[in-house]
Amino acid sequence: MDMLNYIVWNVDPTFFTWPVTVRWYGMMFAIGFWIGFNIVSRMFKREGAPESWLGVLLLWVAAGTIIGARLGHVLFYEWSYYSQHPMKILAIWEGGLASHGGAIGVIIGVIMFSIFTTKRNPLWTFDRLVVAIALVGCLIRIGNLMNSEIFGHATDLPWGFMFVRSREWHALYEGQAVHPTQIYEALCYLALFGLLMWMYWRKNAGERPGLIFGTFLIGIFLPRFLIEFIKNPQVAFEQDMMLNMGQLLSIPFVVGGILLIIWAYTHPRLKLSYPGRFADEGKEPGKKKIK
Image (cartoon, rainbow, N blue to C red; front, side):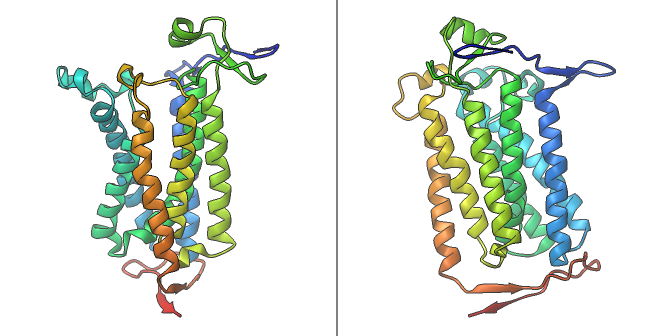
């Protein structure tokens, strides 16, 4: 990596190749899931939730993320291609994941988890799960950086990047530095992770159902909406759009976040117990409303 008035980014996207090939992106994804699992585990233990819930939640979230992200890319960005090549939808190793689709998939997964496992309001799970997801989002954007993908428009700012391993960069911006929008998003999500951790552990914000989840939705999708203005279009049809697909898909999530925060502050606060240990199977965290 050389540094003049810009940064030449020439990082190999493959982390190691023996005995199997592991790419930085996949490793960041896996690390995010592992750290996230441990964060949610600590929360469940703090509130006395059954330990068995963790494994079930992990399965729902993993399935929702992967299936939702893939179908989101297929439906929102390249339906004209995949409608003609439906078997290619399964070729997830060829790339093509959409964060908005992943978000929808996780939402559906958590609702199913709440119906079949916790028998509680889904907001209870969302308010804990999204703290970890904010960190996962940060790590995924670092994975995008290592892949030299999802970058921005040309810039003369001193932190502009030249992604010399990217065919797209050579085709569109040869010799020009561009915005490292992956880093911009990663920093926003890392800051959001810190805020949500503070809200949960220091302010007991989980006692206001929907507050943490609403803050998460705004903190993820508002920066995404703004950064899209300097991000290179992902697909050709976005070239002539005033707001691209990523921005249009972000608006409902931001609105939903605002509504959830209003809901949280206009409904009674809960008083949760914090036994600091997992519940016996069949029991769930105690709660009662307070004025």
